[in-house]
Image (cartoon, rainbow, N blue to C red; front, side):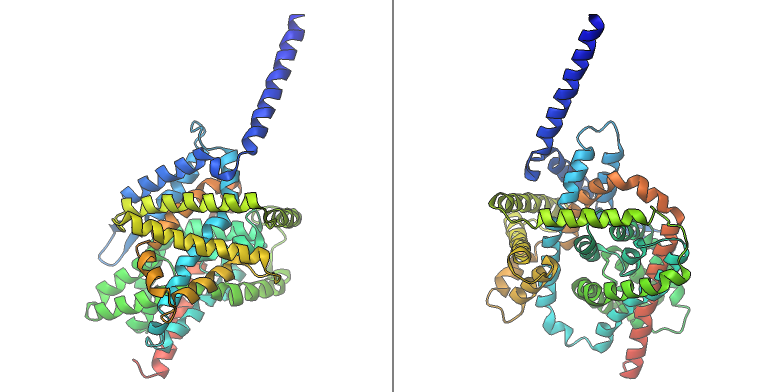
Length: 465
């Protein structure tokens, strides 16, 4: 009898747990207060730590940004078993917010594009054409990735420099659970950790080659604030007589990479990488995969199709949830922006975030309401550019508010959610090991070398050097 009571009690407890689990899963994403409060706290911590520069020698230094802290802390909280606030459920919710929260970041980049269109026409062909040098990573790193045993992960790894703007492109095209996304996130994580010191050393080494410092300065602007600073530091020490010019060229180049690197990936980088992958993989690809068996990629594709169909269903409830979530995201960014010392004007910053969120929201609606199957990324980019062009009647108002929002502040919050979301795949990431580090180094070399070669050639042809 006692044994029967014990079994009965155990069954009741299991039923209660199942009911609690179902109830938890039914919560709207914006009601997941544990997740959002945790991200807010880790963003505040990351911004308080701030930018840190570590000098190893006079010419070699690394610059660590708050976005790295946010991502690592988010991942660490998930992996910390005693921290009950963040678990598999919160990680899954964070994963589902990636595309939505990427849109304000894309809107910020798009507004920078439209705002500086007139300036870009005056900086010369070299600084614009060197952007095509970023494609060098495909030709240099893709064969290396295939030789090391990567399969479709190599597409995400080598189609771009794998920085913040490129994440959204891969997420949107292939889905968050795809091998391509695992590839781009691997290079992003490894690049964030070792990229600054590696490109600083690379920049120093390139000064020994017959490249003009102007070409090296342009190549330093690869679309990453931390890597840009790390690459420029040795140039300023080695060529102090060109200090102001190096900083100007590097800044413009980084702006172009931030603004147009996204479109380079969408329209050229990814299609080219996929074609080269299908041509090279049968010839030099290994029979084993560096991560998971090839057959499971098909399961990822099937899962992505199901998720995409579910996500693209437009209902009043879902629209309302998007609005509230973007509002929460805007509040966290505004606080992080203030704590990080980027702006003390809280009201203006918050209004700027609302504008960015509104552009992102409209872009998502366009993807679902308009008949053509066009990504929300393109809609968000086009809307942002058109509204911020010098001749736009609302350009002055938009730039007034949006300029108070620091791009890194947005990325820091976004990567806080990313850090939590990738926790569930951490075992998968660990399998990449040294292979991921090797590919990441070749990705950076390919981009830097390609941009330097093109910039040097155009500068010579135009008689600028």
